Length: 318
Image (cartoon, rainbow, N blue to C red; front, top):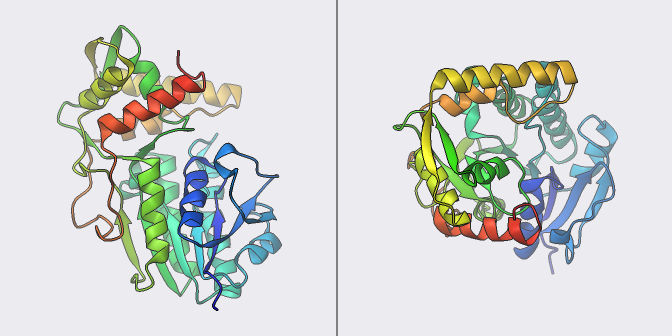
């Protein structure tokens, strides 16, 4: 009897990675996960996986991670950094090192790179630039079957990046950034993990392709709609006030200056402000992973309601 396919996973201890590891295990894959320290998390309570200690700078660890694997999923990356150089050192150079290790030790593997919808417009921020550079680095360093996945905004239990949406929506007055015509695609983390796990199981997946993910409304949501649904999930009925683009840009510049002085990067920055003000983060039908492999089932009202319930259960929200 042939053993189940072996998946090597980076970023398995991150927000998406934790959910992805459980989704892969549920599909019967064997797992080998790169981790900088002993992994312990409630989502992994029943998970069986081989752990390789190391990081994206550790060439021997990367070799051990991918050796003999059928699928390699690169989900590691920075979402905040102190500088453009720091973003590139992880999101670009780390991807190049992993792809090189896969080329040497598992050339027949299917390499799946988890990028970001922000990579569409690399000029907006150092983060977006680094994610596009990471995509190119994977393609330049690996000659086998490669698929790039660009998720939109991912939310759900255990996420701190989108927690700010709910904290803002809990106030009596809620500022709404961006144009009323802007659209932002969203996806619940369970649907994102399920789609990537389905892609890993797709033996005939073509190489060289780039696909996006999205929920049941891939064209996206207006910022006011997103904040309104978050407020409704919280049981709040606030007053919404449109925030001018100039105010968002100024706040982003101030946040970047503070991060530079303190040496502590935050999620919000001048680059993130430009991303927030970009009008089109929707996903077209042509970009989506084929429906037979990505069938999202969680709409935004349901997803926000369950996320708020989790935040309250864990004490993140009262």
